[in-house]
Picture 1 (spheres, rainbow, N blue to C red):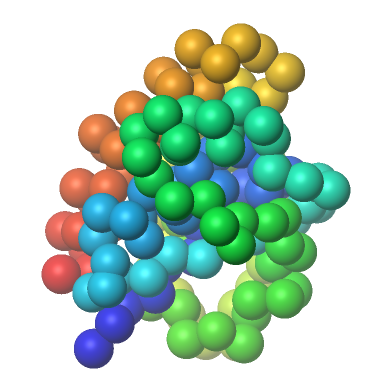
Picture 2 (cartoon, one colour):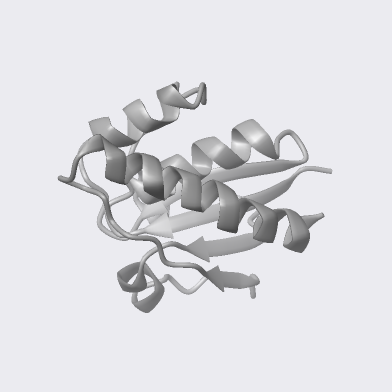
Length: 134
């Protein structure tokens, strides 16, 4: 049975989008990731898309979403990847295990920053999600 992880950040434009794509590519289909933001931006950061493409990670379907749009999903784990999202994390209709693992926000920085954050998410967050949902 597929487990679902919700990855939350503020803008849902960089870190959470990269984490969603990485989880779905590397841990799917056993684990499915969705991402959302507490105050989502209008589009996924181009640096995030480029960093994912450089690692041959598919980006089709990635778009910022408000957390309200995913509250009906059968979520098994909530991961906050920024301190602001942790502080404003919504109250879910039922208790859901949560993990807070903040990553640097590369928004507005050179592509190298996005690549570094992508690699940190892959190295630190993916093993933690795998362990918690295996």
